[in-house]
Image 1 (cartoon, rainbow, N blue to C red):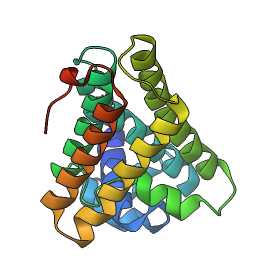
Image 2: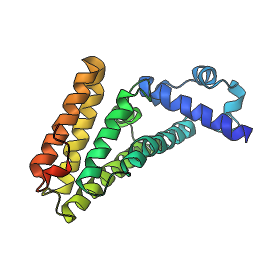
Image 3: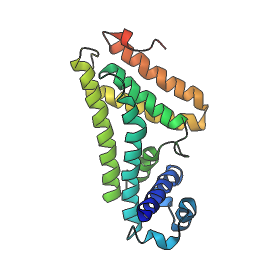
Image 4: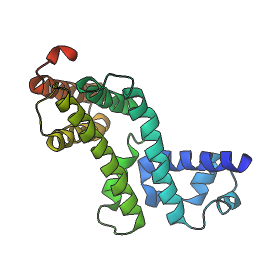
Length: 201
């Protein structure tokens, strides 16, 4: 149990640090200090840095499910759950869960031109998320709550969510989140035959 707690502490620290400095910026010294473990403790869990990076991506994906997908699943299926996903995502950023805002935003920029297992795992995580968004749009379409191309609308919602990451950090944070929320809300209301299911503002 102690070994598992140590591993989880290291991965939590790795994801937090990587959200600022990228996976390539992880160092044993910084991670040991942040997680409160000795450097020798790392080698009981990972043979090399790439293994640590792959597990960090997996940990970040689990964190995303816990903070974004699970809370949104409380909303009714359809357009309301789709909007709840976007709101939960913005809350994840605005609540400062990670010091850098978004682990995956940094990871995709870092690894988009670096072939290998880490790039493949980051791409898989992104595809899983976009696939879930598309599935949620399709549920809303099937229920008669949206008239939209699921793949196209999922892409648009994802793009607006990503824009909120950098705008909130380089400009005014609350305004960026408000704009990102309103942009998706207006888009969904315009595409929905039942806009009364959604907030007015």
